[in-house]
Structures are given as structure tokens and as C-alpha cells.
Image (cartoon, rainbow, N blue to C red; front, top):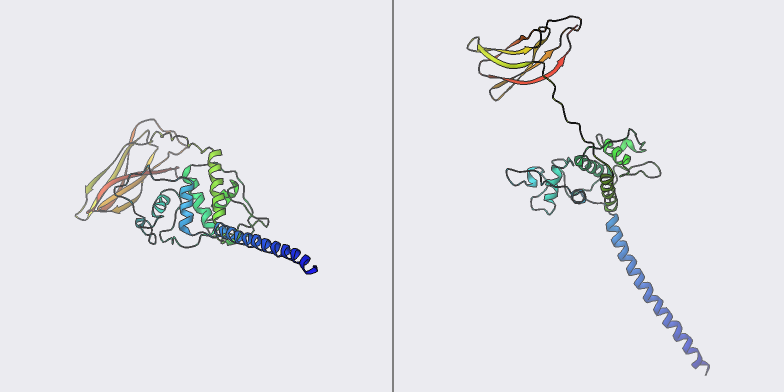
Length: 298
């Protein structure tokens, strides 16, 4: 009888053990699956993924550009294949401020400073924004590649990027998909909350000189005399030839105005100014753009 009464508790214990094992195995499998997903989300991303995330995330495009022929990734990059699924994103990146190197490797891992530079480049292409005059102290600043710190600082100011408790940015550390996604979302919020600066329309200045032209006269079979002439408001102004650029059979003549002596008075009489130079006979003299004016040498 005693043996009969002991079998039921033993059976119950065995059933409980089997149930716990089944639950434990199921939970373990689920944790492994979750860890696998989190590992993918937290893992480092390559260049192609980073570029695609920025292009898609910020909705960059080239709709306003008209091409003579269909653009190809190989037109701009040496290691991006035209048949790659991300080739179109690289073309869009080319025209939206990311400034990717020509020899960029799409399968290479992306550092945090690289991603910051590309993201800020895309943001800047969206519009010109006002930035407060502040500089964040970055503990590992010496590890930042030259030319990358401005992008990092701007993203810190916009609260798109952050430093850790030790004030470190880890510029050479790998960029993860999770962090990239957060930064892109913060960029979208910054764009939505910030109004780009509208540049004031340029008011054309009244030119000091009028009727500016260039004439040529043969001096010898090898030399041509070139004269730049213009009309000035009065004889106090001067005219100088500042340089000549030779290209494709043309000699482009650059010139500038010399302002009057401020200590003298001049009668307001329209006056012709002239400046002379000489070029090889085989070149055609062409008038270039006016250079900035200079004060009277005194």
C-alpha cells in the first residue's frame, strides 16, 4: 500500500519537471531569436546601408536635375557597380551633399564620424540653417579626422548626435543601424522644427565703369597689343590689368578699378580709361570678369 501511495507524488513531480523543461526550452529559444534580432539591429553597418538609410530617410532625390544621358553609378564611383541594388542611392547621394569619395567601398564598415559627415552634408543640402555659436568639448577630439569636426559639432548643436557620460563621441567606432536610425529621425525633426535661412536677394551694384571693351592691334608677327578701355565718372579713377589666362586659343584679360585718391577733388567729367598689355599673336584677346576694386595706393 505504501508503494502505491508514493507513485502519485512521483508522477506529479515528473510532470512538473517536464513542464518546466518545456517552458525553459521555449524561453531559451525565444531569447536566442531575440538576441539574434537585436544583434542585427545593434551590429555595425556598411557604406551601402548607411548611404541608403540617409537617402531614403531624408527623402533625397534628383528629380529637379535633367541629365543629357541616364546617369550611372560608375560615372561617379570606381567601386560601385551599376547593377547593385543600392546604385541609385549612390547617384542621388552624389547630388545631395554627401560628398562621398570617388573610390568609396560600399562594403566597408562605416565609422561614426563618416556617418556624421554624410548626414550633415545631406542636411546642409536641404537648406541653410542658423547655428548658435557654441563649441562642445569632445574628450576624444584628437581621434577625429581633419575636416570632420565641423559636421560633428553641428549635429551636437542640433541634438542629432550626442556624447556619452565621458564626453566621448568615438569617431572611429562603428556606426550601428540603431544609432543611424535615431540620428536620421532626429534630423527629420530638426528639419521640421527649423526654418532655413532665406538669403537676401542680391542687389546689383551700379558699375563704376561703363562701356568696357577690349581691342587688339598687331605689333609684330609674334606680338599683339591689347587695350582694355572703359568710361569712368571722372578722371580720378584708374584701370589696371590684373592677369591673363591662356586657354584654347584665347587670352582672357582680367582687370580691376583703382578708386580715386580720397584726399583730392575731381571734376565730374566722364573720362575714358585705358590699360595696355601684350599677348602672343596666336591668341584672341577676350575680356574677362572685373576683379574687386582696390583703394588708391597712398
